[in-house]
Image: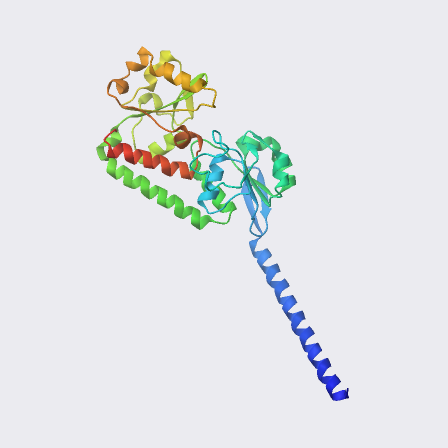
Length: 319
């Protein structure tokens, strides 16, 4: 081989190595810039947590949080069991196929969570404050503050954590527009005093303003009985206080854990002469609704399904 050919070959090899080197540097630089841009600090109920990149393996530790993720187009790798689902509520079970059950909100399975190798855990201070440090050893962990009535605040937080604030705001705007439409359709019916009652094993409660259904009725603009105008959560009553459960309309729901105790209590109270003497009962304005949708699920999917129910009641002149 002559020296001219050797020179050409060496020049070609040098050029190829140079291009490869430039390409590698460019890729590394792009990746570094991307990671730098996506690293952000999230403020939450337990402090601050740095999130790098876009988490793909997310574990969610509240029922309403599960609904939020699904609504935002994110399927978790693990989630806490629905309170009365097997393991998921019927209105989300199709979307939750192959999602791992990591226990209850009140008793999560740390080993199961760790086995999923998540890159983000989203929990709640009211439910899991005691195990925050343990969760944080598994993956970056952020907590919402509380539960109960104001589900919208938690939804905004979840959207921020997922870097989907714009999508979250759109979903909330759509919900608020539905509320406005329902309010306009209701008109004078907004003066109807809505009573909310819940039967549980060994307990009967009237629900106030800081509840899932209470917040929604307040936003629509419906009146509430004088006994239920508090901005607190709820109050347990005995039969001697049944008058506090009266209203122009009574909506009730029953949380039964499968042992029949709550259902039995429901029937006992509904058949009691004191209950039958309530004005709403006499006027045939007592309606049983789904406990999951009107209370227990507590998320954006349930909120929209509850609006579906209210629209039907208005259409049927039940209110």
